[in-house]
Length: 395
Image 1 (cartoon, helix red, strand yellow):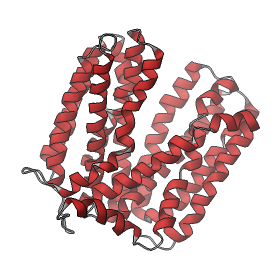
Image 2: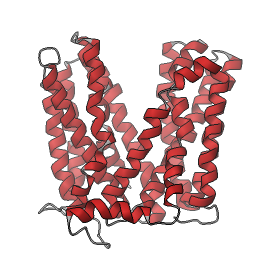
Image 3: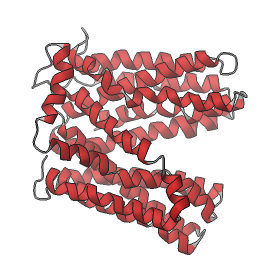
Image 4: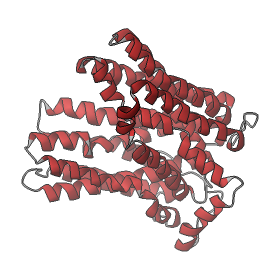
């Protein structure tokens, strides 16, 4: 569990170093807004990480084993890439900093692949829920340190120094990789690269109800993702100040999410992943509809705290169960490839279904929009009848 927590931290740390922190640095240096906007393209490796995941399943480094060996190589490369990003000059060499940022996201996405595979292979099925909650919470702490901590430090030192400090923080992950043990590969490993690419897909598609499982993965957090895409404009239009949003939504909400994730992991340990998906999915839908209350109460900070606490707490539990469920679906022989494919599928609704949410709000208003987001969760919950029956405790 400690390994899951620390590895989550190591995976969450690099994410915002190429997003909000880099945007702040480039803005401060006077870089053109069009260039800053184009920099979001460096996040492409997170979306297509399944392309090179088979290489990490097929080949084993000559030291530390298949998972720890790759982790050590990738984490060292990631630490150096973050340091290179830090010593670049965003105004004088925008292409150089874009290249360095692309290296950071490539090695960060690669680290995600191996850590997800390691967690699946290291933990028994009944402990995947708690292990996933530890990983998700560690991930969020890493993101908070990089974004919140990085921006605070940038007020007192240069961005170059901030990035070098963040690069040094990767030593926590490297040390954990060296101290932990290699999971036992009972299923063996692919014998050829063709097997590593072809067999994981065929292995999954040959399962009973494979198409329903994919539909469930697409739908389960669809409404939650759509609602989250428009919450900040909603808070501002409702009349909350930026200070209130920062204090309640960002800070208080962060701890509500962490608490929900940890409690969700403990509940899964007792009830199993299937039942948790049912309960947490229902709570997610209800909590999304809770935003409608703010339309009637107006900018009351106490009510905002109640809505955010319930929504973030429910979302934290739902994410934990969802991540554990996906991990349980993978064949340990092809863990890296199958999990990379499934986790990439999650990004589809987050990216494409969230894109038209602004048009929906303009067409129907905030109240109907949040009600629809809540109702969109129903198909995902109904699919649980087939893909995760209530009475079947283990996946």
